Length: 298
Ligand SMILES: [Mg+2]
Image 1: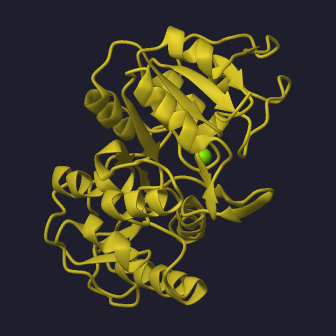
Image 2: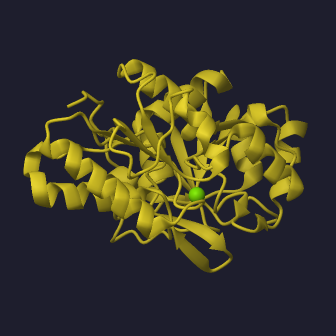
């Protein structure tokens, strides 16, 4: 079986008491306090159909204040260039070099794990295929694939492809053949539109992992997760931002906030997306530093 980096859960630093609600903050206060901004996209700047109110003005505000910023997104459905085109079509001033995506970490992961050049099944739209790093791409039912890359839940016949991928994985594992499963995007849920939600690519990793575990128990391959809250995407984003005191803005406690805190950053929970702050339900490891109602007009 191919050796892969296990999806070790990030370990948070010292805990804030869960019963202590974070203070509310404002964009103006954040601009005074921090010298750079890492921004989640969905639920902070955009939903599945356009920008959230005030998002473009917020980005211009950061530029006017001379604060460097990057979008740090678990989206692995499209390249940064494709994503930038989409953001621009929605009126956001986002260039491709402003985007750090979980999908863009995949080529390095393949190389690091000795999986360059091996047959790969990549699930996602055509715009995600570049993340295979030149590996030969084959269909889910092709029994030669060694790597299964679960980039996005759209762009293919979901149930048929997942059934075929599951069957191929079982075929290979029954014969002692290597199977490596990687899920750049660990998200389970995303904002499809205001007040409407959808299942995200991380659900595919859960489905396959749980199904394979029923047959193979502890010997089942564990999917490797690259995006938030896991460390690789934060390390890449912090290095690229290049400032001493950045802050992370996100709408999900279990990905944006937990990941930021594990990376040693302050984290702002923005109230226009998935998570809501409920002190009695949030584990201390996921407690944000600040609450912000919206990046738009206050
Ligand atoms: Mg989000």
